[in-house]
Length: 215
Image (cartoon, one colour):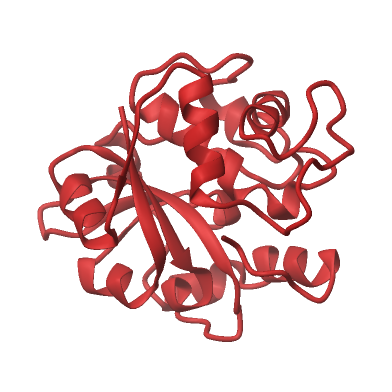
């Protein structure tokens, strides 16, 4: 699960603080080709309610369901849905499905920890009518390379090449490019990165936990 941070502000700063220039230098900015060639979508966790800095899990669940062809209540497609808060309602409802907030009371939490466990996301997926299959991280990478939709539990700093960003994070992988790099949608970098590609080795280096295959 994502690790607690000292404050909500510190996590928001970490989520927003790298900027496009540094990401370009690291070769991490999304290409339009990568965006167009898969079923992944961009959804920003920021602006998704009082717990938006913790919402990488529910947001990844929304992304995964859409990529898997499942209907997501209140999901907003197209450019509007990629904006900050563009899918606020869909993510707030998914938080409730995951058991992280009470239905109809998004300002409250039903858990005493920061972020979410993979099991919470699987509960939300099943409650929304999708299938969720737990897998080892390596199995998740292999499934994503075959075109399956996979939620990966990663160390965000290692994924971005910024070790100081010391917290767990959820991203969604599906498909690979011509070089064998996996396509990834990152809800914590929706505006700066959106959808990009990472080598399997880069993702292995960032491994924090397990994976869930969504169908």
